[in-house]
Length: 111
Image (tube, rainbow, N blue to C red; front, side, top):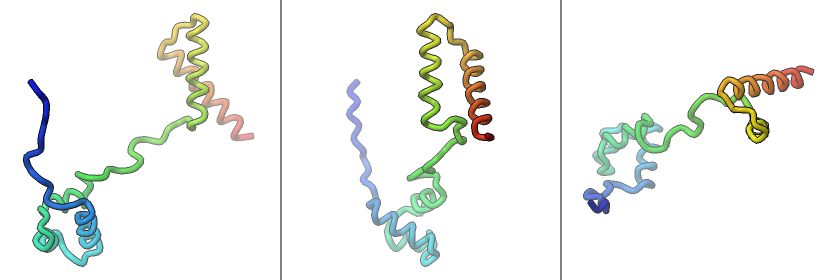
């Protein structure tokens, strides 16, 4: 079966127009009903972009990382070295190595 999907429905508004409408609604110059009627954009689209259920998502999702960006490659390097010399890499061993590095990092920061 050929997978050449062609959208059957055109977008009702441009991205710039939608952003303009969202700014008007956020600043409370228009409500979502008036904006939908004036700019000919579906109200559901305006509301879903306002509440973040559609459109641009949060910039930084997830929890904060334990190690900084420069420490993670070092840990990976240690683990690759262990593997190269014949030590099996089990989950528990990897966790112990990272915990040890974290404790040493804390000790260095406290001095």
